[in-house]
Amino acid sequence: MERQTAYESDTKVLLKQSPGKDNAGLSLVVMPFLGGSWKEWAEVIELLSPRLQCVGIDLPGFGDAAEVNGYSVALMADYIIARLKTLKLKRFVLAGHSMAGKVSMVVALRAKNDPELAGLAGLVLVASSPASPEPMSDDKRTEMQARLGKPGNSYRKHAEKFIQENSAQTLPSHVFTRAVSDVLRMNCAAWNAWLDSGSKEDWAERVGELNLPALVVAGDKDKALGFDAQAKLVMPHLPHAQLKVLAGAAHLLPMERPQELAKLIADFADRIVPDFERRG
Image 1 (cartoon, rainbow, N blue to C red):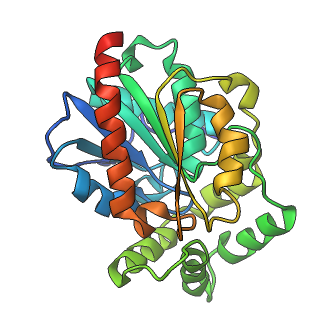
Image 2 (spheres, rainbow, N blue to C red):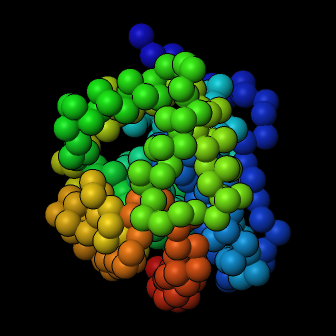
């Protein structure tokens, strides 16, 4: 039986904040893809921090939260909600990449009835896993688990290949090294849990339509969660969303296209601040 998340007793510093100034009190909370950490957003944060406060949160089993248990979508959402309540942000945009996109939608669902999360002003979903089961073949799941589901002599090689296969071009060396290091420090149990169950969970009916401004971003070279998947599986939940496509990019958009992604997020933030103030 899966143990509850450990955020109540966890003593590690799992939140990383930039020193940037708020855009009318608006903060950006970023979360990573499967195998990654908030550090994948480092270049985006650097570009945005002069105008937005940026906060990075890792998901249970990954990055700085590698030792935190609770790998189901519900427990990951519990964990993120607890962290958000600790932050006490006046207003914020939740930015989830890949796996974290699915978790972000569940957090937004729960925020509807939680006054402590009334500051949620919008969503940014980057190459997002859908609320419905992720379109992935059993063979692909088995392959991913065989490569990275258990440490072995070829673990680093498989970690490098994982990052390479999800990028449409060669990443800067320091970015690539950082991404591989994040994969190497993840908890394999969390990796396997996502492939075995988390990515298969069906939240589509429960999530329904989220009445929030949203920005959905896809890479046109992303074979699994590109434009078609976002348009068909993610956009129906977001009636107030814009779908943007980055040409020549694959799945790791924060690392592949930090400048373009930062510009899209900055424009989105500028757009939603007046809307939030009217709602408030």
